[in-house]
Structure formats: structure tokens, C-alpha cells
Length: 159
Image (cartoon, rainbow, N blue to C red):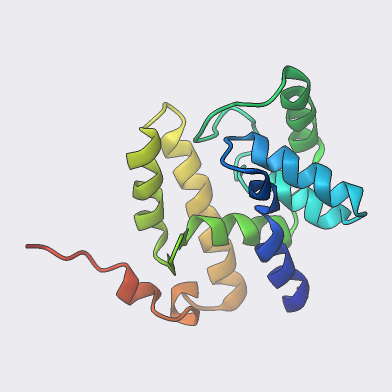
């Protein structure tokens, strides 16, 4: 993998949020913008980063897109073969809070507290855990040991 390419993809995966606070529509805003400037690989990441399961239904958040966009996304995910960049950005999204990196479980609980626990939650959590396992195996270590302060940011303070 090209670390510079992965870094740029990580920075740009949520570029659709520049258009404001939105649910699933942010992925389309990012995709459309990246396609307009001929950045097809980043456009792809804008769509795939929220879907460790290649299915549009397990999405935490509001479906504020058109039925045509939803159909496009379903077909896009079904016909895509995820590469390590797709999986890496999914992983990074799953271990990132607004101000810090953390263990995945902390991030998943954060999302659950905001969005509840829909029926698909366990399957989506397992998919995210598999992304971490994939990169642990590629790196030959627990990826948390490669990231500054992840374990410290993830401790639970019991009072």
C-alpha cells in the first residue's frame, strides 16, 4: 500500500461533510465532488467507508438521500470488490472519535449511544472487528500499538 495515498484517502473520505450536517447524503456529496474533480479512487472511498458490510441497510444514521441514490449505492456496493484502501479507511473511521483515536469498542459504543442498537448492530460490529483483524495480520502486530495514545485514550475511568 502507498502510505501517502492512504493518508489522503483518510483525510478526504468525509469531504461530503463540507456541505453541512447530513446523514447518508454526505457520502454522495463527497462522491459527486470527487468525481467532478476526477478523483475516482477517493470518490469510491467516500461511498465505501461507511459499509464494512456491502449492504446499504446496516447504516447508523439518517437516510436523507433520494431513492435513486439509494439504488445507485446498493448496486455500487454489490459490484465493488473492496481493496485494502477501502478496508483501511473503514478501520480508521471505526477507531476515531472527533478528538482522538481509540480502541474500536469505545467508538462503537459511542455510535450506539447516539443512534441506538438496530437489529444489524452485531453483524456490523463483527465486520468492523474483522477489518482490525485483517490489518493486525498484515502488520504482524496489534495495530493499536502503532498509534499514539490509543490505549491511554481508551481507558475507562471508574468512580
